[in-house]
Amino acid sequence: MELGNNIRRLRFDNNEMSQEELAAAVGVTRQTIHAIEKGKFIPSTLLAFRIAGFFGKNVEEVFHITDNHGKK
Amino acid sequence: MGKMTTLPGPHSRLRTLIIITLVFLILASMWIFYDLYAYSQMRANPVPEEFPDNGLGIGLIIRILLYGSFAFMMFRAFENGLKTSPLTVICTLTGVVSGIAIVPDWAALVDIYHDYRSAGGCIMEWTWLFISLAVQLTFCISGFLLIFSLMKGKTFATPTAKPAVNEAFFEITQYVGIVCGLAGFAFTVFADVSLQGWKFGSWLIKLLLFYCLAIILPYISMVIFWLLRIARRAEANLYDEKQKHDLALAGLTAWLASIPVMAVVFIFDYADSGSETDSLWLPYYMFSTLSVFSISLLLRFKKG
Image (cartoon, rainbow over all chains, first blue to last red; front, side):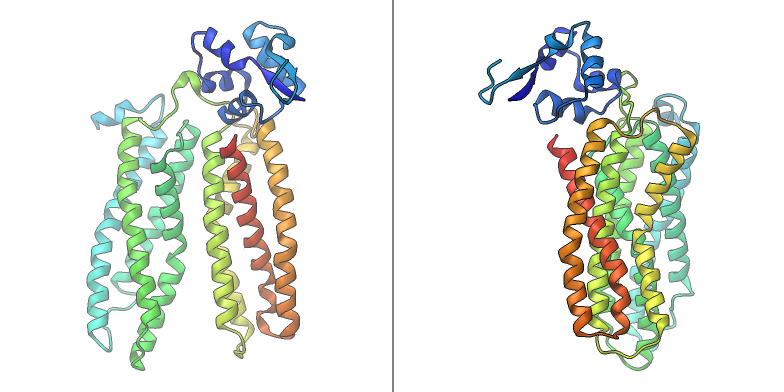
């Protein structure tokens, strides 16, 4: 199982926000946002809440558990 | 001065440092050609009139001043949101290498001065000095380009996207760590191999450790800058959670890698027990762990 997310789509829906801008807004580096988007790094609960809060969503709307084939 | 106004935000200190660095850069660039002339004169004369405490020595002092002001300029630029780019990386790395090279340059010049009197060839010393000049020239060219881009404000992050954690400085620190670590390790191996079987006093080991300190100095100065930021609390978070995660894994990798390296050093020392080069275990340990740590951290950072 892996942690999937909709961050890329949410950024796109949010005036095509860049990874850099989201990183600055939630207080991390652009590389961290990039790694989370790609599923290479699992964020802490605190950071997951901050990202979700930034987009005005619940954590479940941003992050979801997927199987190894990418299915929710 | 018109172009300077394009620098984003209140950068008066940065502007001053850019001007000071530019002055030293111009002087150092001119001195490269003087050095070339002086080297050709020295090679042509069996007993050189030019020696380290003449014009060549002044050139070394100018270089020390240049690298000092360049370091302060870069620290200030990173504080103001300087982004990493190939130019920033090339300029920093050639600056670090040619800064470290001041000590072996001076040593090579002294060797040449003394050896020429006994009709020595000094091929290695001359090779080193010309390689060092090439690195200096690369640094000067990239330095001019970097200063030009700093004046134009092209290499800064846009104010809306200024990062909470200084990512660019973090990345550059790893590049400097790799260069210092590999240069120091290569120097230690060279010193250990070339001094095997020699009988010398403890002064030479002290001199070698001084060289090692000079090699690691750029990395130490970056760490001190980082510690000063903590003391001043200039940033809310020095590292974010992924960086802390990467730091932990890189630390583990460096520790694991240090075991076989130190085992090899131990085996050689054991076979030649009592040798005066035994005390080189410290630079072996320091430079091998620094190299592996910085490479591992940079790879994790780049991989995302």
